[in-house]
Image (cartoon, rainbow, N blue to C red; front, side, top):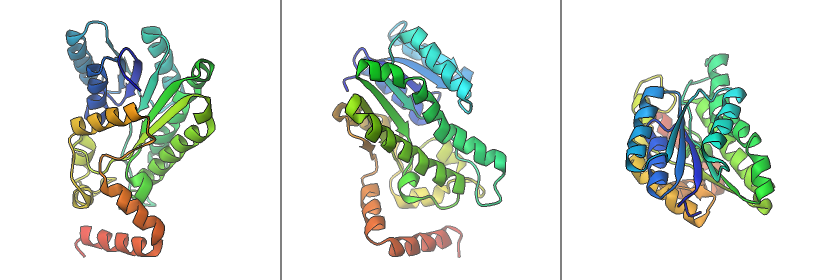
Length: 268
């Protein structure tokens, strides 16, 4: 997809990958609705974009953990832009640890990391199918391909997010819908910095040991280049593909290796 003059929506856009992607979309000539819970940060980003190109960026402050909020986001985006060419479900949470994780945390993890994707598409799909075109992009994680050490909710929801994107591509790919899914390892975001805490969902030391930690702007450039090619899988860290191949071909060995890695991160 050429982003010039396209109408796009990016969630989780006040910082991190979402902010960088929204800025890169805008740089490529797209109009962008930016959505995030942090209204103050969000408005700052939107103001900077509009200073470069007036009336090209719009803010929607929202918590996407409910269907109603997703429906409202789509409705407001249509009011701002008209037809939505591309929707990027990037907002996510990294919460919880093991089986002691609260039900509330499990539910929030699934609501934000999985159901928000489903809810957004629910309110977009009729327009896309009627037009015979549309693009859905989501941020999952290398944890959706490989499983993260530490957080059960994070790994399960990222697997589910990837599976939903695959299902969309299989189900609607012959009717004009394009789908891409971002599965990065370490990216220098607030989520990774918080993961240095001992009880965090995704252990930062594990991420750093697994490969390079990229800047959000680097990831955004890779996302845009992949969208030009309209390729499903977006892998900013090429080594992830190698890890996936090893997992598929030698699953028992891969599991044993992950157990050893877990022990190393615990200092055992």
